[in-house]
Image (cartoon, rainbow, N blue to C red):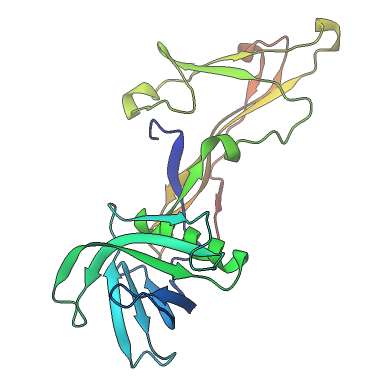
Length: 239
């Protein structure tokens, strides 16, 4: 987990790539031309063609960790759904990688623009989604009860970095119940890894949810009063 509050974990839904017609602004002649774009995750390239049969290659770019993609907020030549991509220019034969250039492409709709931005962002991150942790952990339970998780001397937060030696032992859990003790319910606690690497025969890089620890029937906010539940194997693979 990075210090920015983001996590790379879920495999991108665009792992097979993305294709579609977008308008591209020329670098020499500043005109817009319709091109058929192909985003290839395996080779980390973004190519554009003059036809949909992929016979008339016009150019391409190499996608790397130093690349970037942004939505252009202002109108560009009267166009509303414009994306700015910074990437390395590729020669037609792909034998030469040039300097980083700014590529401006225009999508036909807001939905198409957002799809391309997400797919390009995932490609920059090696095929994994970049998740905003604060948006991921919404409040699905009512009432919402905050907890404090501590491994040793480390209190876990969105930006914490935990290594293997930190998490060998069970964490200390503190539950903050905002109401009176008379209305205090029983609690259940589940420690789930949202992007655990799961080995599936014949497949690679499968990520899914994995249940590490479960305690049920917790009384009076005391974790030790609960019952630990053992699961032989439980996971949920993300599609």
